[in-house]
Image (cartoon, rainbow, N blue to C red):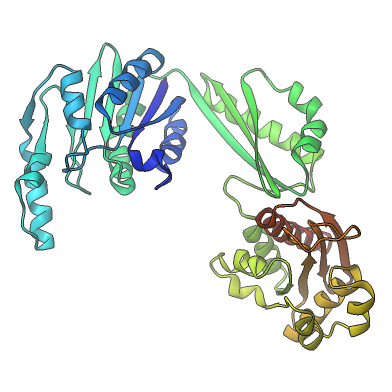
Length: 414
């Protein structure tokens, strides 16, 4: 079964809001074996919607539409769909009562524009929306299903969960889809592709591999398509096991695992805590750590030592090292890691110092040069990295690399 998603709204096209609806819908549809053929964003103009509907019905069995169902004049979807399917608007009494009750509970006066939300095309099946005033509308035309829903995310999710997904799952569907996402860190996309070339070339023809890169992290998504869900699950699991033998150190998690979660779980397992001394990352490592619920069990605290004065006074970095080697050096970052570990009384620590950019670089230490140190009960390890000339990416990659260095040390100490 092939589906297409059409999102309506000028606010999406001008970048005023980000289309998170399509990503959520695609995930849910895939989970019931519905493949996404295309996602299209269009303006609020009627001719664009008609053109999108005509194109979508040539490619898809199901067309899901979000947006344009509000009570104001710029919301035209319902009127266009009524004309498109050669129908007329009629009053849907359950929706009207739903609207009246919602306004009563909020203590608000109801006007005709609100009542008009209960007008629906006569030819559609109404999907009652208990989270809002605009109902969902299910059309069937020439063996293609069209579903129109509000663009408000929580209203769309309610209609999808309560009405649309169960109906689609109940429809005859011979294709199953199994996805598995493998999270990797500390390896570039090109090097990863070269390392996995033989394995990838020998994947069964019904399994597809996608590389999903972001700064510091690459997600590998295996997608298996076929008539037997159990066979697909077993083969995907077997391929993941092979991956684990090819790139064992690079894989840190699966699905939606976050590096900070994984690292935290390793610390909790040995009842240890970590502290952080950040210079070029400016607190991002601490933010990643504290974004994890319950991180107080394994995170002791941090010092954002941006100036040499703070490095010297709070972390006991020697003046001679700062003068001789500079702040961006192995000597200094080692002392930062060991200093914060002592100051905050933790078993492990992380320290970063680098040239994030866009300026400040030298021929010896160009923009993107970063030193990272991780200190544990047995040793302190320091490494130099050369990232890019983009400040934000440098900060993000440094933070993730630092967490990964801690993860690897924790695994070695198990």
